[in-house]
Length: 116
Length: 117
Image (cartoon, rainbow over all chains, first blue to last red; front, side, top):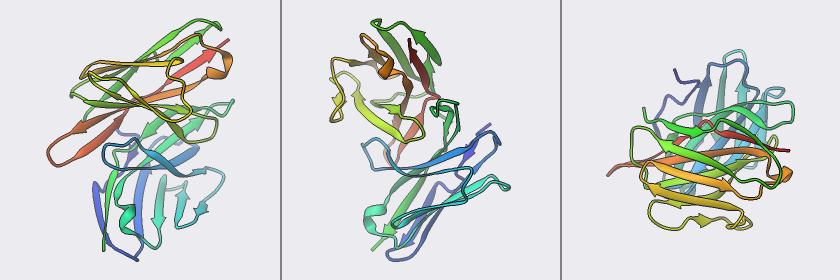
């Protein structure tokens, strides 16, 4: 049973518009969430994170929203650029007391294509 | 779906000893595997790219002699932390790439928690 789901395997968006990538989780013990971006033949790179005490975190064009009651988070990219075309993974973790992750689980990824 | 396993899931060792962590792709062949280290409340840091049959490619700042990577087969990569010290205590995660003619999909292992006393 997948603990972290990204139900859209792919998404296409026009350049300049908003990209919204969704992620759902089932384990209510998760309290820290991260988004990663991956280009072909490269490892994922960290984008943005949010802890469960917040419902929004913004960094430039990237904003992550967390809805704990719905166990849902989303990544918004505004405005979308062709260079944003990549696979996006969401990950969930429950922080151990020493702040290292435990039960660190990744979703299957969503492939975003930003069309010029 | 494809599964990636890591062994062990947790390891505690004394300072100065070496620890080997295995990453296996259970139902697919992975020509490329990646090794990451997680820092407290932060993102995963990519340590190295492990290619089957050739030397690993290390990221800047990662000591090659400290973190030995071997990718002996298409389903197994190992990370050996040599002469471990308490500052090496961390959460290590691997991922494996499943490549088809049209896709390049990444599957992550569950991670290994290393504690060096």
